[in-house]
Image 1 (cartoon, helix red, strand yellow):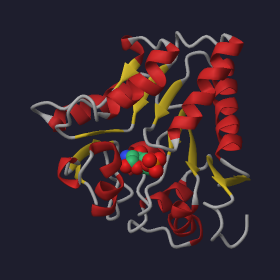
Image 2 (cartoon, protein in one colour):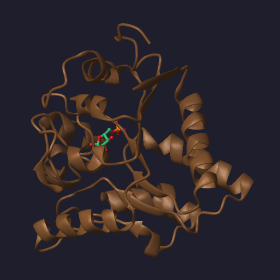
Image 3 (spheres, protein in one colour):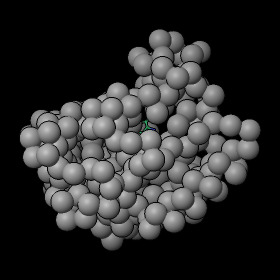
Image 4 (cartoon, protein in one colour):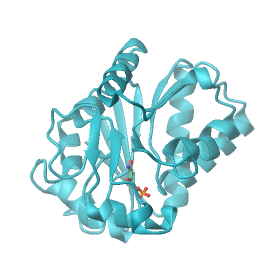
Amino acid sequence: MKIISLRNKNEISKKVSLILFSEIKKNPNLVLGLATGKTMIPIYKEFIKIVKKSRLELRKIKTFNLDEYHNVNNTNSMRNFMEKFFYNPLKIKKSQIHFLKNGENLRKTCRDYEISIIKSGGIDLQLLGIGRNGHVAFNEPGSPINSRCRLVTLANSTRIDAIKEFGSLEKVPIKALTLGIKNILQSKKIILIAFRKYKADAIKKAIDGPITKKIPASFLRKHKDVTIILDKEAGSLLKKI
Ligand code: GLP
């Protein structure tokens, strides 16, 4: 596991965007695993700037998103977030985008999603944020290392953190569809990003604590190509960087 500590979210956004840029430059058919959340907004904004400046070709990439709220209205969906902050500004075509969609048979939705990841050759580069309880995607504490794509119940702290987007706790969905830890660990390369003080405890437990399903992000230490990119505040409780 590689840890990169930077001064602030601007430096982090530049760093991650440059990694995305060079990975796509190397492999125009890159299969990209994408995340939503406030952490990703400055990164996507910076990446858009770089793409526009460099005219990087994105027509052949494929994207797979990690998760989606269950029975969510369009405005608050993760799909909508991605349209706004990534797909529309970058003119990513529908045929390039893969998303977990709500529907009748969610088991089948999940199995089909896993199959389409495999058919695309697997995720080359997965971006991840982290919840303050140590979740990755919506793998809440208690998610085992062999967990796969499924419908999960959100932790209270996760729902509380989403109040800003939804307006009130009652409006925050109770469940969500998510890729599992096993799916995430099958990605070839993983980059987890965290900034601000309120992520420091989760980062400390994920990196310095035991590998346990109580902190699902700790399972990332089982992967051979993980980079954690942090600002000083998010890394402030680590033993050493
Ligand atoms: C959400 C998402 C995660 C995200 C995390 C952190 O619940 N399911 O994919 O990484 O929480 O979100 P934020 O970046 O807003 O702190």
